[in-house]
Length: 178
Image (cartoon, rainbow, N blue to C red; front, side, top):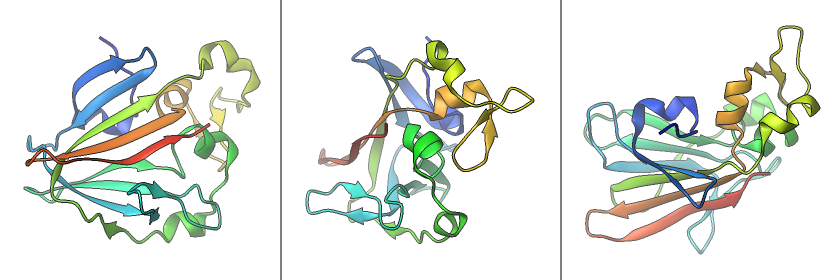
């Protein structure tokens, strides 16, 4: 089964599945086979526990999973580079991208499940996107990427949920990105 997810997560994705026809769902596993992570983030955590972006762009969330065994860090989501809005609609300055200190999420080490919503039919809308002379797709931040990367990173919904060893469940992101 071919599941669409960002290429950066391919080496860490296990238990891949499709849910509700347009959501690719994965669980995270580090390169040493561990499935428990501490989460670190840039953004603001509201009273309900969800992580939101900060000024000036409000499109600057960064979520990193840190393996509790090896210390390996896996970028789960970089809103300045991924998601439909981050790729095509909302520019984030280089200064803003480079100035996002991470905070540790106040939650015990947990298993991480990520759901990527792919509701945009890039194939049928291909001609509306600007390309360069090499056929690469031009993004809002000046990068040029392949059509495959547009399809993988251009998700329009993201859900990140955690489950502790004691069974406690927490969603930290459930947001539309288009």
